[in-house]
Length: 113
Image (cartoon, rainbow, N blue to C red; front, side, top):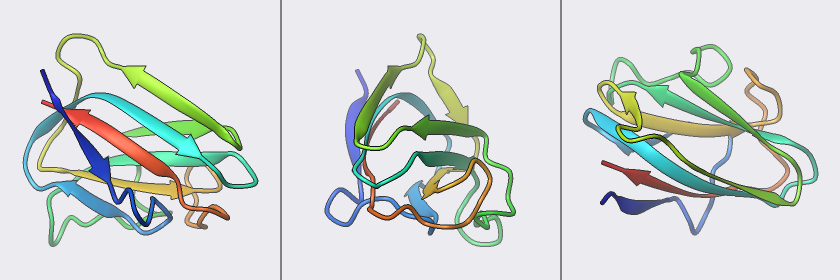
């Protein structure tokens, strides 16, 4: 069973990409709470630390999840999960491929294998 990883749980997820894992991984589930005043878009990137750091608003995300205001989202992926090559980065923005931060940081828990 995958162990949950709290992603910046004290400060939350905003428009600056956060490196979650620096090696290949499978995301098998997540729980996200959006306490901001509008829909937030959580962007998942596969990239390793260093030269491949995603540029939020420019780098195309591998997976994007829209979370309506003041709600939570929970998802478990099928058996193998969603594979991220070279590492996992995440960010939260106000549009699907934008770079502006939500009005409040999102709380995110990610389960990885």
